[in-house]
Amino acid sequence: MQHPSPARPAIITSCFPPLIIRQARETAEVKVSEAAAAADTARAAIDARTSIEARLRQVQASSQAENAALAAEARKAEGSAREAAARADSLAAAHSAALEKAAATAAALQQAQAAHRAAESQVASAQEEAAVLSA
Image 1: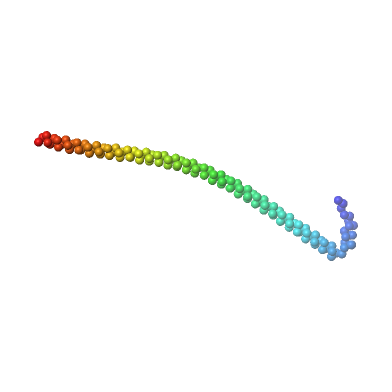
Image 2: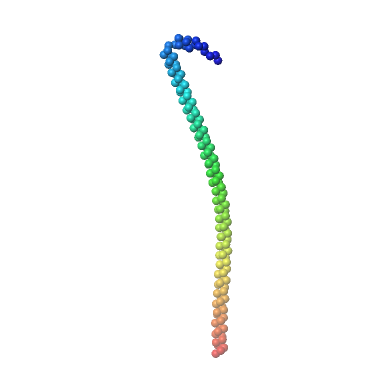
């Protein structure tokens, strides 16, 4: 690209009135200022997007860590629930065995009471017989 010759500004100023040149300069300055403002706005938007993306990655990482912790807690709770169910089954079996043992003990007690009554009856008969014999 060639640089304009020093005579060129003189041609521009001689061809155009100073008012038009001043308006063109002001318009160019406004356009440059608007372009600078647009560039600042674009930079701010890029910075905001970068910040939002970083925050999103942070939230996703935090969410993944929280989900992993919740999953571990759920697995632990599931294991505890299984252990509690196994203990409940064991206690139910022990309770059932204790009920069977109590029923067997009650039956044995009834038999013992019946045997005791029979023995008392035999003792009473023997005492009566002894009284008759001694009389």
